Length: 331
Ligand code: AVI
Image (cartoon, rainbow, N blue to C red; front, side, top):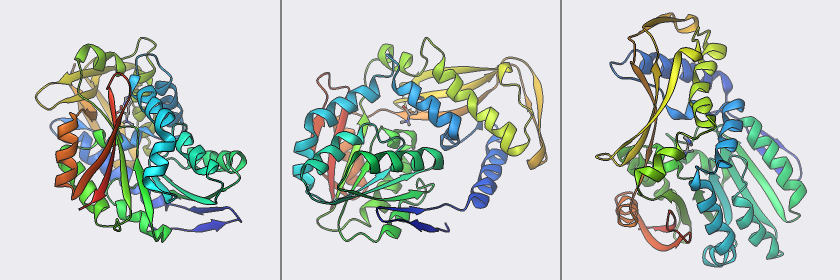
């Protein structure tokens, strides 16, 4: 990744090379849509519109994940801050940082300058959020990074922090397969110093009667979020998808312990995608697998961390024990 730092007194911005990103998108779409089970990586949901739709999902009554994690951060912010100390806070997938604000407020109340380093794949949200936080907190200094961190958590080394708390909230680790999660955790653990911590917010296993509506809401916002990836292929890669000819689907796969999102073709169809020189054919009811959301038990989170070279130190739960915030250190 090439980074370009635009500095002002309290804000530094590391930019991703957008041309490289476009190329990767074209490559991933070609790979995914020509596979026997068509698939697309979920990271491509998050263009500007997709990020806005995700914010709307977080406000939905069915999407308990957001409020459960918010409850944990609101209730225990001071305790978490005391536990981690006044370390620079790096956040993978920071989005609008709405929940992180509870923790940032605890930093602010300490009355000492602190550094927040948000990393996100959506540049618009990152930049808007950084500017908003600068207005809200007087002690904050922000080093923001526009990056696709999923395959290379080491991008955060560009912040050159001596000591850090690295946060990965929102159950976003659940969008990786367990194998990818272990790899991500190992690579993250490898760049943690002895005083550093890793904070993981993760959704817990529960009844499919609660899980499924969270990914298939009554207002159809999750459906729009899922279908948005077809719009994105249309405008970024010259695709000719008619999104209305696809239907959103969310199922719980109990063997794998994950919610799967798919887009099901309502009819047999051929879809040209000009920029990748492909015509993709669909049978009626054929699906594109667009996302996995793995759910874990507390023990599985501990084991996953251990395999990722991390030791679990503390846990916090919401009152219903729907969601877990886990604090790890490198082992
Ligand atoms: C970002 N990620 C953790 C969300 C999830 O729950 O898997 C994305 C999402 N997909 C559908 N609704 C929300």
